[in-house]
Length: 377
Image (cartoon, rainbow, N blue to C red; front, side, top):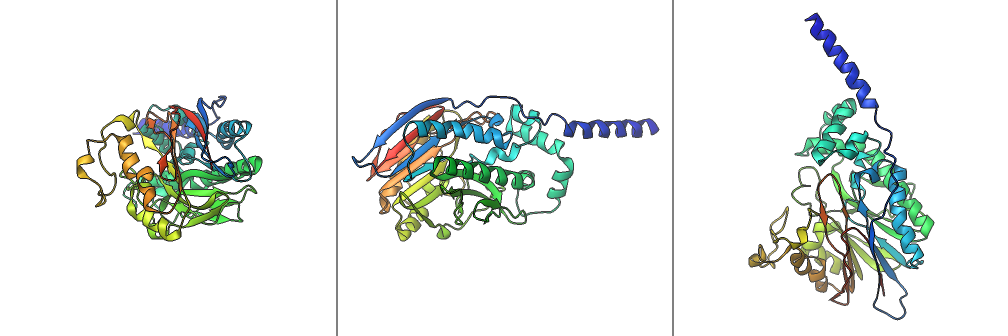
């Protein structure tokens, strides 16, 4: 028994040492993997524009604030050098772009893990006290494991996200819809910081940053979480969807699956939005070419033809039942949908931009990695 106790003590000592070591960021130079830079004009005057950026993200891009900033700056610099930025520019970024900041300042083994489960398990084992403290503070989420991790890292995630996008907005003098990030009870502090309340539910949220570095007090929250989110992400009432008075016009912003539901467009029409922006992420490699499996996380709306399930490809279903197909039910003339791409623990990614002007889905050059599309009108 004595030898067992001594061995157990030694084990805990080594475990404690292990949790604090290996947290120095991997030295890696950020790469844009940029395949496409495209200018798309719908008007000779071209007085306003939406710059859709499809970043190609790797786990190492989320190691620290500097890593995240340097990666995104590559795309902003390319767009700026291409002459895409002006005082009437809005930059659109994809869903979950900020969510993976959950791994910031973690062990190198988290970034290099082969699977997302391996990465998250390493995070728990290397932060035992913080994880246990947060876990037993409770919550109503079905997936307490995921909810605990996100709430444990939420202050750091919010700080990096708000700092990086405030800096980029000021540096380039543009308005940014900064994609989405999963946070508990987010709110805006002092106009340029995102605060969080870990006693509140987790939401898949998106924010608007202005050229002076301030953040709009209206926070976009996803209303129709998909099945992988439902165990830990709370749905926000679609009736509370609001609009932003941006330089490109009265703008509504939807987070991915929200763009598939008629209720979103009913609200958009009530608000008389002129522009609709969508942040998206499509998991899996080559998913857009596979048979469509139907709605994820909620039953199909009444206007969906059940025969289309398994008949259409995923891409064809996006075109018919998401932004390209549903925008015409509103008075909005302009729509833009951008996807996240990258290699993130083998999760895969797919998706190409959907740009709509006056009811027409515009042709775009595809990119399987990084891309920038400038929709000018």
